[in-house]
Figure 1 (cartoon, rainbow, N blue to C red):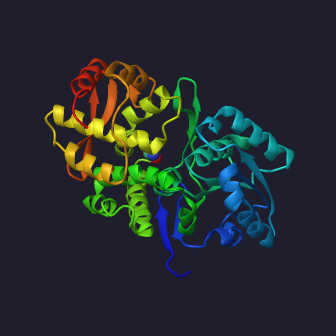
Figure 2: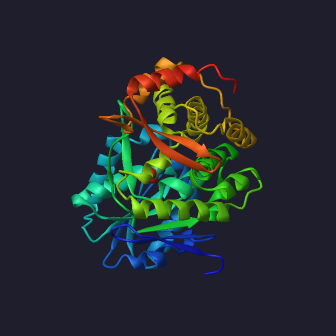
Figure 3: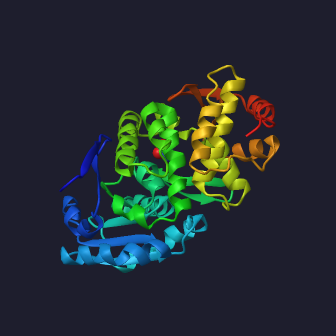
Length: 354
Ligand code: GLY
């Protein structure tokens, strides 16, 4: 197909990430890669379903599949165990077997939730990620992290379950409100800060970016990291840059702040912490790019509030909290700090100008 990029992720069971324009209406044809599948359950939210649900199910039906759409309200509040259970009940009611498959259609919230349902239905069935936001395209649709939120924190109940295929139709990005598109730029800047000066330069071009190139470069970085550390025990933790403070802010704001907006603030705070620890000072350069994308980088929470919320995050281990900090422009490293040191570092960097 014209201008289509295919990136193979080498996890225990490898899969392709296919990036191109106009793929949604060809979903049924791509599903042929999942041999034996007869019934497909398409999970999305009301916004995404009204835009793309019919296109996907028409394509599936034309290719001979039985399918149904399961639609939940949009937003982080739907990313919970009740959404998973109602979807699983619907799969059982449609008689889905272990040979059948789920399609997770939408942004990170439907992707993580439907992926988790696929991970546990009949002890795991196959699923396809069809990201329709920039954030899902560059990050959450690849790598097999599935989860829902619980009252103690974000993504605290989940499983590693790799998709069988990721279909990224870049034309879906044309339908996004500017704020939703911007949200994905936080993850793009994250990939740049962790591994690629070229991506940081591409982010400076916002909003006139070449999104196909950006998505391909982010997915290639993620492919390399996830192929090396599928289960997030080592190098993959680099992809948490900005997420310790970001997740804390999301929790403190009861998810009224979007993930990208929180990660943008979290990356700046992490850069300040790195500078305070005597590592590279990338704060100004990072703030400049993120402000250029339109992110508000102010932090409404005290160091003490952030610290308390961060304690519930998964990045906490018995030996401390793993922080991802810039070593130089376009390169980060992992530093495990004791919990009391994190509080001091958060206090030390509280008053810095934005
Ligand atoms: N979103 C970070 C990861 O997949 O590891």
